[in-house]
Image (cartoon, rainbow, N blue to C red; front, side, top):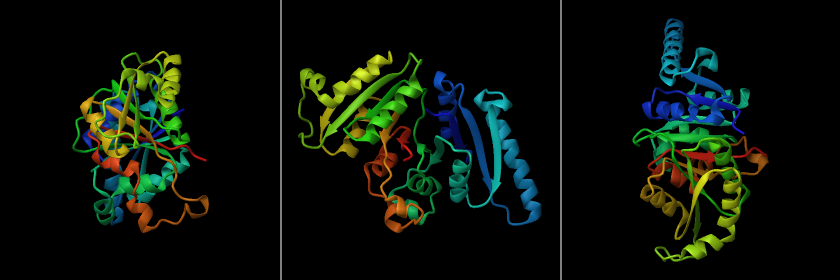
Length: 281
């Protein structure tokens, strides 16, 4: 499912570590990796130096990742980082964009010209965000937010594709029902008989992966972050559907850039990397 990966490198250690852990997964062994660095020189002389430095930094990263140079395609582009990442992702037809993130809130992101927030809001592709201030670990505990939506089902399919053949992974199927009272004690029988969780569990079991089911009440975004912290989750996957009609996709506006969805909340508040699975229409 994830055939082509675009890693937008800003030099952030956390994002680089996350990429290294992903490349250790069996499912990523055959994926095409594109490593992008964007430079913004002001003069022709600066351009030559900036390009040479960017190429050297990509070479250092390839060494850090423990892969051969022919396993990754280096891309150095001159321009505005946020628009360049979007353009290159489209040109390479990337299935997944990986970026570091400062974890700024919506208004802070807009005012500070956040690259990751801009790309997340405007891309139609799945995106993995790795905050600068979190502890990145080798992936073992994976939380997937489950509901009835096609976006959530795509997130689950993405998780199953990513961790197929990786015996260390345990999938935490997590259903937050806003109609249930927060903190309500839910019996194992109720969890097992929940139709949304049981269908997801069957799918995971058919792939031979370990899993647990979690059913809780409350506000979905906040509860996902709380449960992820309580269970020491290493990676969260959730569906992030396109929120605008196709006629307006090329018209960025303030509301869209600020965002107001569950995805926006989780990407800022979660204490682990977050993969926002987005299926192109």
